[in-house]
Amino acid sequence: MIGSANGVRIGITGLGTCVPERVLTNDELATIVDTSDEWIVERTGIRERRIASDEEALSDLALPAAEEALRDAGVTGADIDLLIVATVTPDMMFPTTSALLAEQLGAEDAAAYDLLAGCTGFMYGIAQAYGMLAGGLSKRALVVGGDVLSKILDWRDRSTLVLFGDGAGAVVMEPVGRGGFLGFELGADGAGGEYLWLPGSGSRKFDDPESFVKMNGREVFKFATRVLVSSANAVLEECGRTVDDVDVYVPHQANRRIIDHAVAKLGIPEAKTVVNVDRYGNTSSGSIPLALADARADGRLHDGELVLMTGMGAGLTWGSALVEWTERGR
Ligand code: ACO
Image (cartoon, rainbow, N blue to C red; front, side, top):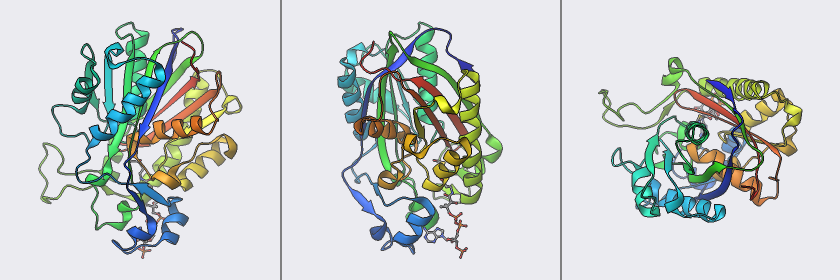
């Protein structure tokens, strides 16, 4: 799916994040599985990640992130009429985390649902919110992307354990006076589904009673390096922009090597690229809002700047968005 904005200006007016307090370093991981700080840093660029406690579930991270985003936008939960939580690790299948969150935030009139699109969930979520806002169905939306993948990892499997971390981010989206989203490109390829999957997590029965993330790292690597480039180029072309127009590039934070590859292929200067995978690992649907928030905290997101975001993940799925940043501009 690809499309450019139809003249309706919808932007991000609030941003918030939350990560668990517990920091898990590579050296600590090396006491759990046969790995080393050297191997992890060289192959992934990850140095540490945040891990939720036994008591912490997704909504415990989503709520502070959402509250911060609402404060940032200068609104309250009551001002939200659409609440999407993109995740593969909801508190439970139902009630949805979005319904729980709507209640906690006082978003009484909001439509609320969870969205499953692997690590690309946040990109799908903002595209859906854009469509509903631009179509006039919603007036102000809250989109949360977050995961606690530590709960579904096999803590004996070094090939997946070292890659992921927990975290959540949230954005408020609404009509803005200037700037806003220019377009989106989203896609999925179920043929590659078994390269990154969670067998036994749904209604299909599997022989293995355990349900953990399984991944073919090399195939996911090839897929990720391909779609980060093709999706970014597609959305830029659709919106009549070029790579040279991009001021801030926010790729999904899966692996430093994947990001380096995309940056080199796209020809985006490193200085314009946001990287925080070293501190958080791959936080799945939390990745892009966490990176956006870091960029803003570092003073790298300014009014009118063109921001390119691309996510990819299980499905296999991918998605890009191009937005002209609006700082306090609605
Ligand atoms: N520590 C030490 N050794 C390890 C570890 C580890 N944590 N994991 C694997 N190895 C070993 C392997 O067993 C293998 O050993 P062998 O040669 O004796 O068989 C060796 O290291 C090399 O393994 P490869 O899989 O070839 O290593 P590669 O260079 O491909 O790196 C990696 C593996 C980092 C997983 C890489 O393939 C990758 O990044 N893939 C993409 C993964 C990803 O980003 N997934 C999520 C994206 S989508 C989403 O966000 C949900």
